[in-house]
Every structure is written in structure tokens, then in C-alpha cells.
Length: 73
Image (cartoon, rainbow, N blue to C red; front, top):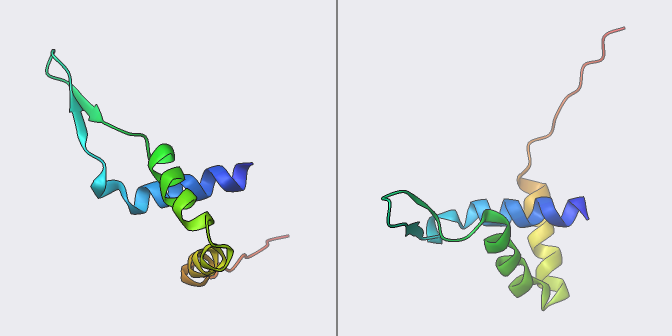
């Protein structure tokens, strides 16, 4: 469940420039859609074809920087 949430937010952040803004009467504004909801739309389109989804996941994992952990005892 957490993995799906993180994937949705990650996809939403990647597509965040396509999210419009909503302006209220008092002059304040906010995004018209949450990052989670936008990412979920992107993932739903990707999930229709399993091979395409696996390619999406591999692209995420290959672009991640390897981390080196230093343990101090």
C-alpha cells in the first residue's frame, strides 16, 4: 500500500507542471489537483499494459542513485 502511494506521489511530482491552479474569491489559490491524484491518473494509464508498467518501474529504479551506507560501531 505504501509503495503504491509513493509511486503515485512520485508520478504526480513528475507531472506537476500540468496541474493548474484554483483561485478562490478571497484571492488565495491552491493546486487544482493533489500530487497523489495526478500521479494515480498517470499510473492508471500505465497499468493498462503490464509490460509498460514494468518498464516504468525499471526506469525509476535505474535512475535512482546508489547509496552507500557507512556503519559506525
